[in-house]
Image (cartoon, rainbow, N blue to C red; front, side, top):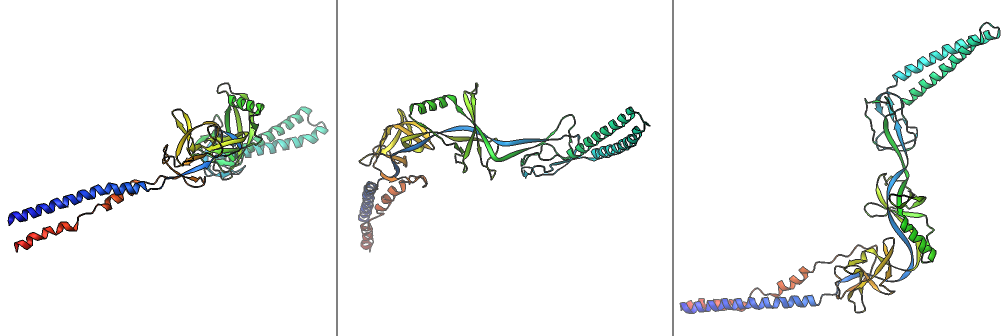
Length: 408
C-alpha cells in the first residue's frame, strides 16, 4: 500500500513538471506573435521642395556697452559715503559719492574773503587814478589782485563741487571700486566706479576676408544675389535667438593682419537689460539670396564614413540612407547641393527608430512640436510571455487525492 502511494505521488510530480514545460514552450510563441503584429514606428519627415533662401553665416562676437564712463576722484580727500546702489540705473548728474568737503569749504570761504578785499582795494583805487592820487602801476596791481582772487574763488568752488562725484552719463553703475574711509585722489585720479549705457548695446564680430571674397565672387558670377538686409540676429550662449533684431552699423574695410578678418559692428535694442557687456555671442549675418534652393533642417543631416547623409523613406515605406552634399547655411537649415530631389521624404525626428531597411510610418513634421522619443518596447514583449504560461493544471491535483481514499 505504501509503495502504491509513493508511485502515485511520483506520477503527480512528473505531470506537474511536464505542464510547466509546456507553458514555457508556449510563452515565446505568444511573445513572438505579439511582436509580429506591432505597427511600424512613426517618424517625422519633411517633403523636399524648392524655394527662395537667405544664406546666413554665424560669426562669433562679444557684447560691448554703447557708451562707458569711468568716474574718478578729482580732489583729494577721505571718502565718506556711497550714494548709489551697485548695479542700479543712474541718471546723468546723479551724485554717486561724498568726499570729506570741510577743507574745500574752508578754502572757498578764504577765497571769498580775499576776493572781497581785493575788490575793495580796486574800487578805492579807481577814482584816485582819475585825479592822479595813485599811479597807473598801483591801479594795475589792484586789478591783477582782484582777478587772481576771482580765479582762486572759482577753483575753491570747483573743488567743493568735485567733492561730490556725479554720473557723467545715464546708465548702469557697476561695483564700487573703493569703500568708505579710503583716501582718494592723492597723487592720481582714483577710479571710483564705471557707468555703462546698455540700451542699445553693441556687438563686435569679425568675418573671414576669404569668405567675403568668396561671397563677392558668387554674386559677381550670378550664382547668388547680394542680400540688401542690414538686419542681423543674435544667438545667445544657450543657442536661443534673442527676441530683438539688430542693425548692422559699421564695417572696417581694413583687414586685421593677425587674424585675416574684417571687423563688423551691430547694435541691438536692450530695453530689459537682458544683454550684458562681456558676454560671448554669435551673430547670424544675412549674406546673399538663393533661388530654387533645397533646405533641410540641421538635425536631419548625419555624418557617415563616406561623408554626409540623410535618412529618407522610399516608395516601399522603408528607411533608406541617402548620401548628400551640403552648402551654406540658411538660419538653422542646410542648403543641399546634391543628393535630394523634389518630393523626397527626409526623416527629421525618430532617427533612432529608422534603421536602414526598417519599415516606418512617415508623419509630416511640425517644427513647433517637441522632438519624438522612442517608447520602451521591452515591457510590451514581456507581458504576453508572463500571462500565457499557466501556473498549474487542475488535473495534477486529482491523483494526489487517491492515496487518502485508499488509506481509508
